[in-house]
Amino acid sequence: MHIQWFPGHMTKAMRKTEEDVKLCDGVIYVVDARAPFACFNKKLMNLFKNKPVVYCVNKCDTISPKDAQKIGEEFKRQGLVYELIDGLSKRDTEKLRSACERVMKEKTDRDKAKGIKRTLRFMVAGIPNTGKSTIINTISGGKRAETGDKAGVTRSNKWIRLGNFDLLDTPGTMPPSFDNQTYARHLAYIGAINDDILDMEGLALELIKDLKIIAPESFKEKYKLETLDKEGLELFDDVCRKRGFLLRGGESDYTRCSRAIIDDFRKQRIGKICLEVAPYDGQDERKG
Ligand SMILES: Nc1nc2c(ncn2[C@@H]2O[C@H](COP(=O)(O)OP(=O)(O)O)[C@@H](O)[C@H]2O)c(=O)[nH]1
Ligand SMILES: [Mg+2]
Image (cartoon, rainbow, N blue to C red; front, side):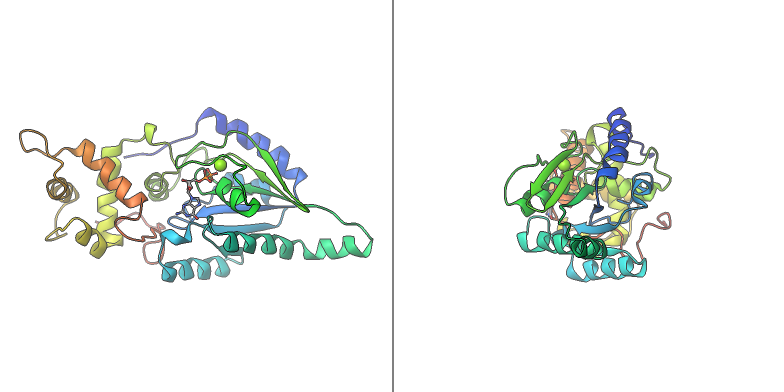
């Protein structure tokens, strides 16, 4: 299975981002805690290389506190300024505001000495569906940016003014191609890639193979499987049977079961699973 997704509107969005970043003091780069490293779009991040960036590991409520801590350690090791947050928590999103103030402190102090009081302008960027608009809504205490549980809800850049703090909501963009297909799969699992272009049955089979390694206990428990010591497709059949997704002749109904498994994963019904904490950090292609 090879995943590729770069619709035309993203080229335009990328160009707009390149223009708009010049108007900003810094960037809040939002990633999804379930696949934080897959969310790094190098091409996009390249546009921010001269700006302070606050990394926001969002949706931490969907993974275990222990895994969140591990992600934090890795970001720290890479020398990044970051916050681990739940984008629906007002208290958490306020941490982002202070992180932005922190990275701007030198400049703000210099301005203050000159008697200048300026508004801080931050662009909220990242790949699609990581929760950029949600975070802006939570911080602003109102539903001002459109959100939705699929890729591509935000179509254009939009300023949200919050007193002396302005945030720019942007549509997410993907890299033009995925050189790491493990990461591409992770993005598909978490819903960052439009489902309509994906082979959902192929994707569910891949997810089964990944869960067998990443979260064997939760996977086994969720579908009441007797053993995981089987090939992916055989496990797929077991899940179909256990969930009652069978066609009239008793054969597996892969189509319906695929949707169900992927949905179970996205809604944490298999467990709070992070796909990218060591030793399953997606750096190596999956073994076995
Ligand atoms: N569980 C959880 N879901 C979130 C969080 N932040 C956003 N979401 C959900 O993720 C989906 C995408 O959010 P949205 O703000 O539209 O993402 P955007 O494309 O980056 O602007 C929506 O269904 C949100 O409700 C979070 O911190 N935790
Ligand atoms: Mg959005």
